[in-house]
Length: 124
Image (cartoon, rainbow, N blue to C red):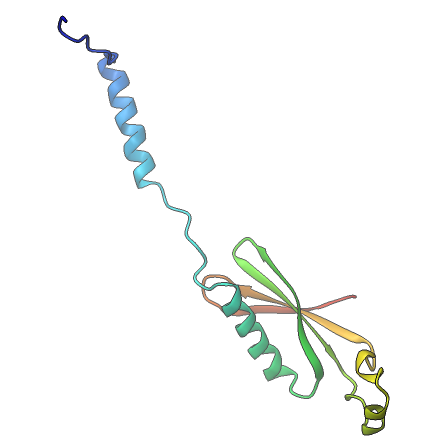
């Protein structure tokens, strides 16, 4: 067998420089970073903020979580009326009924810092 042929394509000097520059540029480009806080931390921050502002509400529960850009949107639902009375304990179906209308708040939590930026009312 004879000598192996070099199958690499020779590039003109300018083309080599452009390719090398594009590789260097790609390496220097800012990387997409993951959020500093994950969804569990965002929910924890939103609930702590909510409970600080509304200490006397009932049946608080997490309703929705959404990521929009650099923010987590955390929706919390609750009742403003007290829980069922002791008489309702005799009714086996009472625990399945909600007393009053649910109210919803949407907290906007910064995904990098964990700071709650806003709270808005969400219509059901």
